[in-house]
Length: 267
Image (cartoon, rainbow, N blue to C red; front, side, top):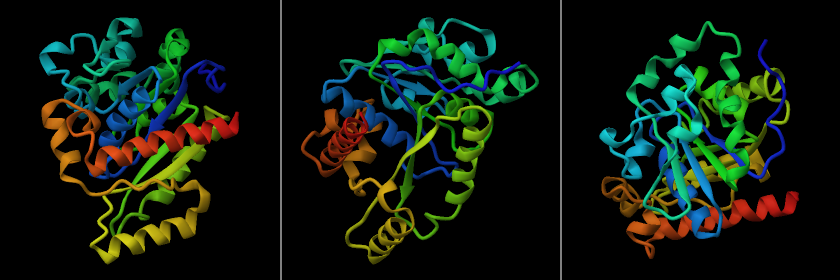
């Protein structure tokens, strides 16, 4: 019978970075928030739960070097410790993804405990990190549900475009479903606006609407549309390693500091 308890108290704060829409800056945010937290003195693990594996590629873990991946952990029962790889960023490790993960939902869909496989697999390493960030796929399927079951909170990147709020209600319902059925302590970490263009009146309007509807759930830090952010993954680096003085790097560092302040206040 599947466990319905919340993640046990541990040193690591586990955050699922989630949005069912693609192209909203989810993976970019996962990589750069993880890197920012390491620069702020934290030990971080990134779990790439997206079959596209963009977070793995963005941290220079090529497909040839991935070997054991999160697919093997979920489907084969491989020890999660065997899947962890160190990145070029000090104190940032990653469990890479693999294209085979796209079939994992079918392979584990009929199994008992299918929604808590990731949570159970991560239990042995929960005290080894300060933060564990899970890059969820752009869908609300079993992989995302596993991520929400394992997490303490859900972090939602939201693009500053016309349809930004469309689908957000469905996503929040999925979080509430996970909270009511498999993870009663799950909370919304917050909503963070991405791809903000100060030259575009629409960006300002979307930002105002989101803050009006969601209030203090919205992070004060807004990530600008920035060419350096877009370039960095092709060099296998977070933006603050690629160009630490650019606007995008400074914004993600500000986001990391804001996240830590929020957690300090809760403590």
